[in-house]
Image 1 (cartoon, rainbow over the protein chains, first blue to last red):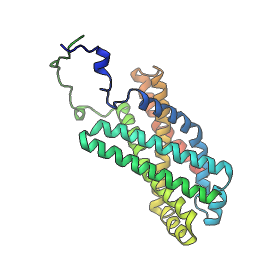
Image 2 (image 1 turned 180 degrees about the vertical axis):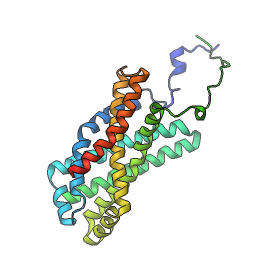
Image 3 (image 1 turned 60 degrees about the vertical axis):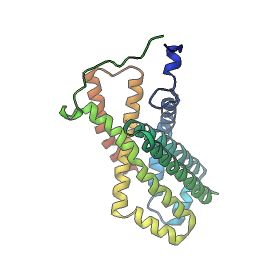
Image 4 (image 1 turned 90 degrees about the horizontal axis):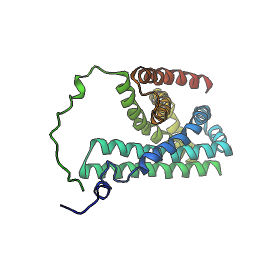
Length: 123
Length: 127
């Protein structure tokens, strides 16, 4: 018999290994994105299709630049967390770790590239 | 200090013997749409990078994004965003412990599917 409490034996054994933090982040980022996505879809849709000067003019408006930056950052963080949940559901061991790292590399790479491009356009 | 013991339980039937239900289909669609949106994210970030770089690079990226294939990806992604949006709201409702009885859950599933198509159409009209 091991002298461990039930709680001690259960800790860290969940699917994610990190308690409720991951699930809670999905809720919070989901609510945040729900507030800005409808406006972004229409504003960004209108910016699409113009020539380069028109696109730069539309994206350098402060409200549009801030909105786009928020969508790039939180959209891709929300994606990375959701994709991690999917990976944890379907894969195990080294494959699981490699896929989670790949998703993080891809999403942070896209965030950095997107914000760099946005800063160059808007400033 | 309970000991963990492996209990022999009956295996649940495999997924494929079930007739598709709107509840299960609308649930898996949430995951598919959410993850598939990374395609649009790659395309749009690349397009932004091109717009920030030069006229020649923008012309290339814009030609790809505005081609029939690029537009198809964008319209499907627009639907995916709206579907994921409504399904996310449904999740919040479920999290509050509401709408979990089968008739309501099925109605909510149809609301996500039909609502996402309607909202995609409305967005296309607005842009």
